[in-house]
Amino acid sequence: MSRIVDAWMQHPTPRHSADPMFASLRRWTARTPRPDVITPDMTIAAMDEGGVDVSLASAWCAPHGWMISNDEVAAVASSHPGRIVGVASADLARPMEAVRELRRAVRELGFKGLRVLPWLWGVPPTDRRFYPLFAECIELGVPFCTQVGHTGPLRPSETGRPIPYIDEVALDFPELVIVAGHIGYPWTQEMIAVATKHENVYIDTSAYTAKRYPPEIVQYMRTSGRRKVLFGTNYPMITPAKALEGLDEFGLDAEARDLFLGGNAARVFKL
Image 1 (cartoon, one colour):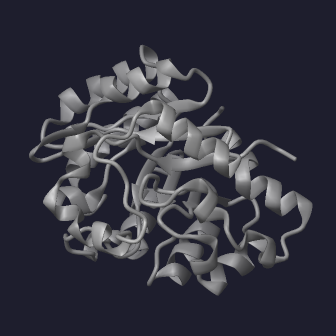
Image 2: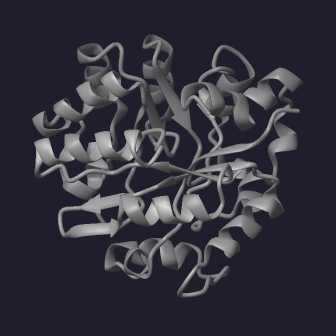
């Protein structure tokens, strides 16, 4: 069995956890309260409980400032080398600074990707400010990670549509590896269509427990999409153990299961 890789989690700062826009998420997860401050050891313990070997931890940059900085992610990663790997964020409002910060995060901090959330900025990923970052991702050889589907936090959902937005980015940048997180619901079939159409477009299942995966994504994982779907949690919203409950009911063969749980992420992120 291959190792398990969590393609999307975050080790949150208190300012990230307390942001008012996450009120909806706190309401959904009220039955599983979590502490105000999550330590790196707590995160590693949650990974161990779910059998996760490596987690890709995201920085968060928003228009109102850094919610989790690249250096804060790097500090957590360095406290547990090989277990937590950084995914950079960048300030979309300052495109050249964003490019330089991405370059620093990859070359100096050892990060393995870039994640920018269109809903957080109120613009789709076809916005011109993304394009210098896409070019730099290609030059650095790292994926661009983003969110598709409706927006759980209290922000509009339009920017999460796979068609037209992910489709158009992939057409403009065919070399860009794109990892579209959160499955794409309620546009899951669109997301599958875009991932099937474009060689370098992938889907991760973060923010959903296995029991809540739409049937079409499970069928895709069993068949032509076995090399296209990556396991993710969106921890601490969902712990790895909780996210994996129900996976055994999917009827995945050994190859499809190993690719989903870690093989695809190891290849896409060059772990």
